[in-house]
Image (tube, rainbow, N blue to C red; front, side, top):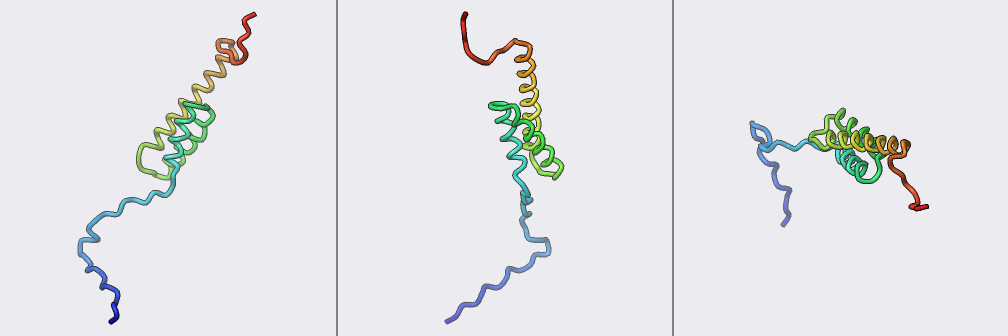
Length: 101
């Protein structure tokens, strides 16, 4: 006894019935958000890739707000980094040994 392949489903005049979700073409919004968060928490220089990836994802038309959130967090991280450099140069904050002479 042999089994043949099942027949294809009948075609509906209204389409397939369920809309297909849009295919994600890249992970740039996710990486923009990750770089933005790490830029604020660890190193302000990670804000630069967050800005770049956020803008690229927005230009590609990626859905969702992760790209925009990553871009905004990138701007905040870079601004805090620059503010830290200015305060360090002005002598308001110091990094180094704690000599009490």
